Image (cartoon, rainbow, N blue to C red):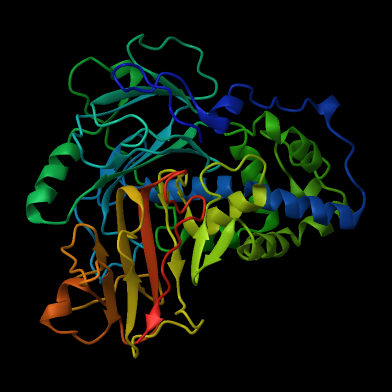
Amino acid sequence: MGRLRMSRRGMLTLPIGAAASTAIAQLPAFAQTDLPVRTNDEAEAAQIATDAYVFGYPLVTTYMTRQVMTNVARPEGIRSPVNQFANVREYPTATFTGITAPNADTLYSEGWLDLGPEPIVLSWPDMGDRYYLFPMLDAWTNVIAAPGTRTTGGGAQAYVITGPRYTGPVPADLPRISSPTDLLWVHGRTYCTGTPEDYKKVHALQDQYRLVPLSAWGKGEYKPPVSKVDPSVDMKTAVRDQVERLSPADYFALLAKLMATNGPVAADAAAMAHFARIGLVPGQPFDFSTLPPAIQRGVSNAREAGIKRIMGQDKGGGLALENGWVVMLKTGVYGTDYVQRAFVTAVGLGANDPKDAVYPFTQMDAQGAKLDGKNKYVIRFAPGAFPPARGFWSLTMYNDKWFFVANPLNRYTLSQRNTLKRNADGSTELYLQADYPGKDRESNWLPTPQGEFILMFRLYMPEEAPAFSILDGTWKPPSVQKV
């Protein structure tokens, strides 16, 4: 998305970016007399249903994720009730398997908002020079705003976030962010070195992060209510599996219902007219049993065909292979690229705008062989060629299941916060191996498992052109060399 417009206080003043600008003109629901004629061709129905499955995958996934992440009475761990923050207080260890590809660079602050009843005021204290980011993702996973170090600076800030149907007043002193959907995800993160001293400092900041209903703003200390736990919500099965187990009939019924309050935008008008030909209309019941037999037969295969199309995007989707590293730059804002939006939802829900973060990863060495802890590897940075990031960079080690690797140092990443030793010529080598490399190399050692493993760089606030940048390909992650 584009840069945020800022006042002299460094605060957001208007909704910005492609997603926010189209949100103003929500796509109106079809009247019964306006509905396109339904198809009576099975092949056409199958094609439309597959398109609709892909289109709705982010909305259904986001909704079901929120169900799981908010089904608690009070904030605990990474979960919290709706309209409350869950502040993660420390980095996970190698025993943690709750979320794939965890990080040890930033502590998360997760807020799942329901903007239907009323606006919510989001605020945080002065962050100083500490890196932080509060990206806001609508129900379709578009980043509609990303206040933080890059866009709005480190000063204390507060915003009023309104839903698509809110027409009431907002305080004149609060910048407004207009969400195109009632469901909004505040996917916050705060940099932390992981030391006891820095944990204490970050906890003090997190304790001042606030989500307050507009009606309670400015009326003293707000105490959120205790939420009710819904025993019918599946808290054990991975959300992706829950989504992909839905029958096409249940999937489209849920999608139609969700679109009543999380509607498509004006740019989606052609797609919605297309989907109406199989009876899928925002806010109107989708009853599979009443559909003509040809449509029923066509819709029945939508799940398998839709998932196949989504996951087939790994052969394109803005992915580039650079020195064996997969680099994906089409994230955060998607427009009408519905397949890419669904693909990123499937493989990395909550992805940022690349201007805020890029995550290259690899499972291969320079010769194209799988990375394996039975071997020793080196990553070499030429002098002055560390990952170009204005925030910070890191390299994380995962096992073949995308979880941290247990090791004697409890070290899961190497980054610029480590005291990395340089060679006489100014270059720096990172040592990737299971065996201890010796005291003189310990500072640059990232322990591997005994079996296969995966590496991921994180570049927060990557440099932008015309500087040396991953965003335009002038910087590429160095290849992993087998020793």
